[in-house]
Length: 249
Ligand SMILES: [Mn+2]
Image (cartoon, rainbow, N blue to C red; front, top):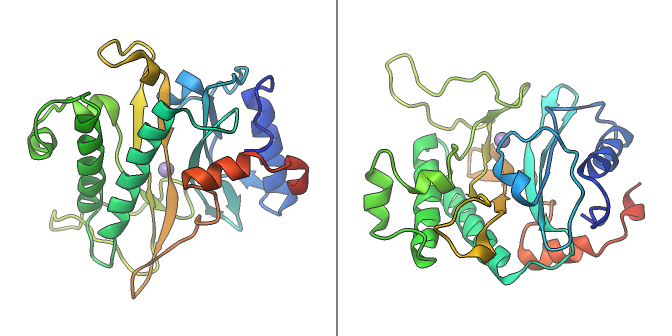
């Protein structure tokens, strides 16, 4: 976060980050790092990582190292100039609330669909409050296709382990949904994507893409957030942006 300043490129940020992975003993990335500034964050599997960072844009990094054969998968979104704009803050806060709401239903045997529902309801509520959507939360959640999926077109999590999308099943043999098991790890990664061409929303929101992703270890008594040390609350993120990156390399 401290290195990613205007005038540097996405690939330079990737380079410094992956240097830190290796320098810390994690010999590879778990998958191709996504380092997506501004509107690029709205391309979910952005791989170019070749744009110049611009003052006023956010930078979304979805990356994870592989350590002793185990994958990690973390996303943080932060302001390149170190301070969130008002509009960026509004969107960020909704995504953060959605993640906390998803966390609130996590326990042994909770279903991934319940986690997803909790996140979606908070995102729909936020989009209604911003007047990007009209109507009620339930109406939007239950409709297929639903307009809110234009803004949140992916799932809220997946199994994580030896592979980044670990090869565990989502449905049991009898067809019922698999619940969370103690000892397993599941990601929680809500997001909101407001592409530059979305002319139905006020201009100040266009080009904002935010995702926040943590790696959650399910335990007998609840869960442990394995990626909790990556700054996430607005003030923590802004403080991290002001840290000299040389402290890490
Ligand atoms: Mn993920």
